[in-house]
Amino acid sequence: MAKFSVGGDEDGEGPSNPTQKRRRIAVSRTTVGDDGRQAIGNQCRTEDEREDILQGLEVLQSEEDPCNDNSGNCFGAGSSDSGEDNNVSAPENWDRSISVTLSDPDVFDCCICFEPLSIPIFQCENGHIACSSCCVQLGNKCPFCSMPIGYNRCRAMEKVLESVKISCLNAQYGCKETIAYSKKNDHEKQCIYAPCTCPQSGCNFVAPSKELSLHFLCKHGVSVRNFTYNCFFSIFLRVNDEVVVLQEQNGADLFMLKNKAGDLGNMVNVSCICPNLFRKACHYDILARFQGCCLKIHCLAENIHGGKANNTAPAGFLLIPSCFFGSSGQLKLDIRIKCN
Image (cartoon, rainbow, N blue to C red; front, side, top):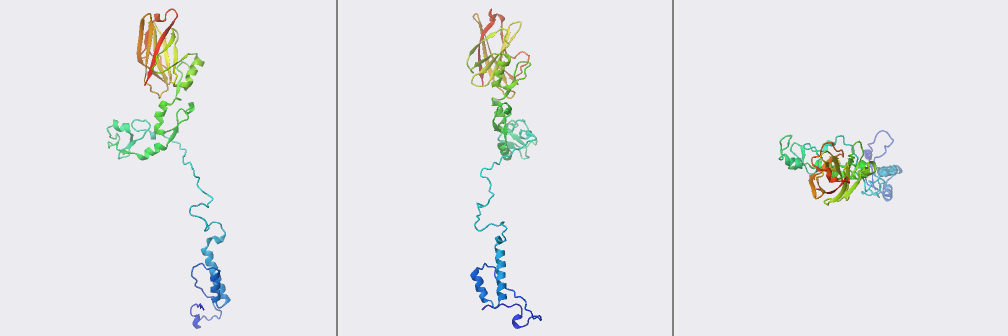
């Protein structure tokens, strides 16, 4: 039978106080079931000892099982590491995109040519960046510190450009495209929603070229003639007609045939009505025939950026004598327009 002793009480050398002190019990920190409690209790001599042991075991069990406080802030044995039983879980398709206001958009422009940066982007050893075309033009020499440039890519800036998406500049005119910042210039040069200003004097109408042709017809009563690139087509020009609008039937490109009467005859030329960002290289041919005579011109079409034409004489034009219009006052012209 187990025997518990404290200090020297075993030899009768206890304190002078006749009241015995409650004995201390050394219990190993193990989980003991009901059977264990009964076994230990049977080994105790007195009820006091048994109660002390049972109370000690209950304290140990409460310390080992933090869920006994009924606080609900613990994870039971049934909870898994994967967090399947948790009430809070991250959504599977979480959209990580954020909206950012850029106070200085010029940070995405090349410091040399001031054009929007495009991949690849290079940097020198001092951190100055430049686009690939500028590196070639500068002979791979940084203009700021004279260090070599054009060999080390700036991957951080490239990743930023790949992640930045912007709306098209022509969104207010109907374009719904969302494009990468590095593709901004390429898209805007080809966007069919790019606005044009009506070339008629005193008119401030601004719209995409598709709507501009309808505006010519409804607002100004100017006839619109459809044509196909690289093919000759005919129009009848009256001596007093100032403008004839030409529209490419497979696209939205607009051209304007201008006729200006003078002392020596009529000056006729073709201009392209295009927005500021467009740079079309278009050539045209005009043929005028009268009584076996043929006048011909091959010329580069003038780009009317923003739609407004100036009052100066065009660089190239066909001068048609007044007699070519005959008694009817009109002349047949054969025209062909080529665009690169």
